[in-house]
Image (tube, rainbow, N blue to C red; front, side):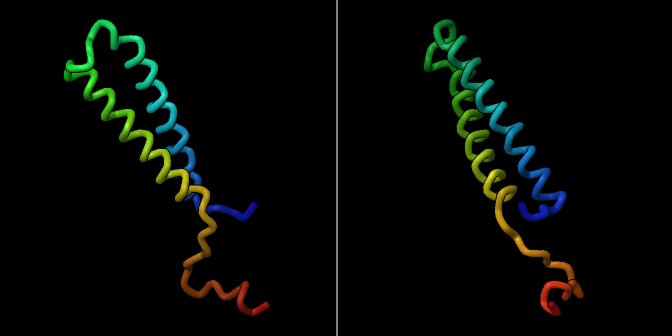
Length: 81
């Protein structure tokens, strides 16, 4: 596995955290939907948070797992060999 920058590593870990938030929102909605009903604003906001965290997970996972080359100026060590 290629060395990742600290930003890619943090994006990957935040993707995992976002997935946990999305799953916990799903569980909370599943447990509360009988009491709240589908027309309650709390249920709508839980659905919106599930949608948001799911797509944040997707985007951050792509950023964290991409094979991005080093963009440092003057880093010619790979080109000279």
